Length: 350
Image (cartoon, rainbow, N blue to C red):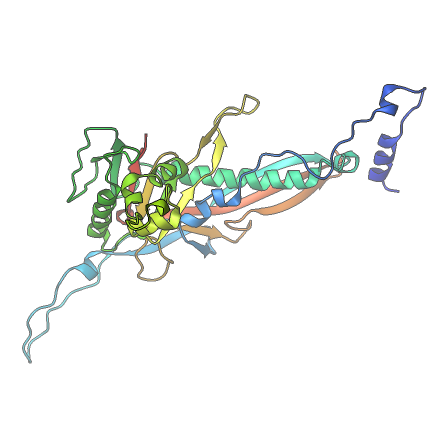
């Protein structure tokens, strides 16, 4: 019998001094189910927004070709015997990246798993917490750094009245009517927004990242719902649209609804939950990274030395204190490749 089994055995011994209440009415812990607050993995969009690509070096540069190369007509009339019109490939200043390392650990006394009731699978709970905290950290970093103003080529803001945008064109700094308003025009806003992005980078956007609060308002927007009305069967008119229906209405290939939440209060204070991604929308062009490719951004995953974009877990025993440290590590770096390939819509609902 090792020391852990000895501790567990001693913890289960009871000194009997006579009949008492606890011997005739024992409240036992339910071992088949318990209460825990965890978020669904699908609530998080940090892993899905930008495409991921593996990188083998901790820091470096990546080439950037000038937009002029493929959008400027340098051809001209030519006659035999003369030199054809010429041009040259131009490059921009290379972009840079640096590996960012994130970590979190939880100590667990070696004897705790052996004396805990079956209703408290302490080792599983500890592992879950390490991975959940690191995923939450990733989501917050992505939202705080890229789901905001002054990052992308175009910024617009939702207002309850007095918007400056009118159908026909949309430029950075303008205001739009919030989508929860009966007079809002999401079809017009997205038509002009897509054309504005194409005017800036040459490609129509194909992806929308939307906070859950904004999504819930957009899916009951009367203008969008009206597209699905059937004059021959009014009883079949939907009252709420789903992601696929919104994507079809706005002609967008992919919609990511950011549903993750976080505690805004300090540790130990009463928990106060709020949405990480807020009441905003990002619209842009996303595709797989590759040579001579236009894309808004990408997630760099550093597989060396600590496991890359996913969480690498390890258990480190401390024999001196009989404590095991459950550790999680991540090494990653989001990179904005083409700011002109995206736009940010702030406070699109009240």
